[in-house]
Image 1: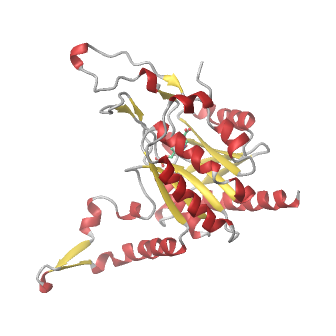
Image 2: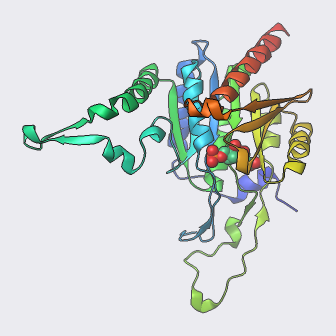
Image 3: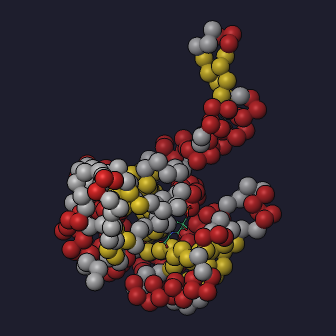
Length: 313
Ligand code: PAZ
């Protein structure tokens, strides 16, 4: 039997900086509450499940945070205030375009200034300029807040804390759950304190089920928000059935169903009424377009309808 969500929070302590992060989020929300702005909480990247309290080893998953970080840029572009709850060291908005050693390849040292000056290579300006322009616009608008997590338990604490600051936005709040959250974990009470020793033999690791957090999120924490979850599968035959099952159980608005292998080019938006395929063609990809742009366009339109319906009631 999995723990109830209340028991999970009672047994797994919050991150030590939870209060500080709560204050950042409250200040951010306060700023955007009265200016009529829509707000989206985006979750991004994978959670880790520690195997020891002083963690040397942990269970992780594949998610790089591409979906979440690209989506954040597109939501900012159309005026949403964005809270980006992301796995530390996963892909971040804007930075994702200049990551890794490629960044150093974009720079050159100005030898005529006696090696005291660095600039962007003229041949790279057209790559960096649009990114920097959008990044500066997001910064100036003060509409972008990043909140980092690493472990499953930190993620769940932060998710709850952020959701609890959003109800005053009513229907203007969207929750966009793109993170790949572990379904299994080692309860804090069953974890060794220190690094497991090989001299003690092969460990037997018992993973428990993580309670389904979508249930309190939809029904109690943000009951008036526009909640979208993702469903990832590797077997096409069960994808839509599982997405429908989630909608039926949690009664949120949309499940975006995707398969691991085709997740960059296809998602199916499953609602109680129908299914809409959102596709990125090879041609669009060659032009530098991304699937997330189409996902965000689709969702913002649906969100507009939802806000209108909610205010008409
Ligand atoms: O982070 P990424 O871009 O590599 O992958 C995105 C994704 C597959 C994690 C996301 O689209 C998704 O399906 N998230 C929910 C996963 C799940 O718990 O079913």
